Length: 268
Image (cartoon, rainbow, N blue to C red; front, side):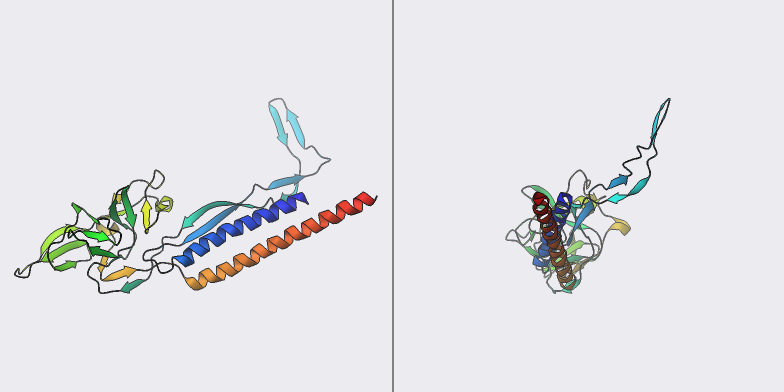
């Protein structure tokens, strides 16, 4: 019965992790470029039940073999494994803002921060005081040749990410730079940070410039919304609450049975 208490407790703990992920997804449902998280769990190693009266050992000169028949398996509950990010494409919404950009496939914008290069899907940019293309927090957006500095009012960005500007008296636009878009060999291991940023690590591998067919298209005047479906998340939250209550009842039942066993055994 003590085992039942631990099994129910591990189930409650697992649902708490799921609830944290769902709550975080719902809190960021309106954040541009946000990718939802899923809490992943795994079962404790199951124990094989064998016959007590049969040792099942066959010995021979070079060792032994376990031949005891397996009666069944004994589950030991679940444990938290990891929070897994789903990198599905979010819905695109038109803003008609010159510096709002969206990626229509896998990839990340590169942002220069005081802590090193960071990567984002949030393309809500603006032109800073020094005529530098920046995030809303004031971090420069990187081009293939460095920081992108725009000095004219007429600006256009094509699907290849090339930034063109044209002076009022000029006939043809001038190419300034190309927005740097990178990818990772294992993006599932990227670490989430605040302000819609991800950081690379040894597991994700270094950032690689995306070129040719691997490079996603860039849409000017659009933003990518989060890939969170609030209806689905609410349904999952209801499911978590019911599973949590079910584990609570398991613990209550186990406690009641244990209490009855102790009290009745004490009488005899």
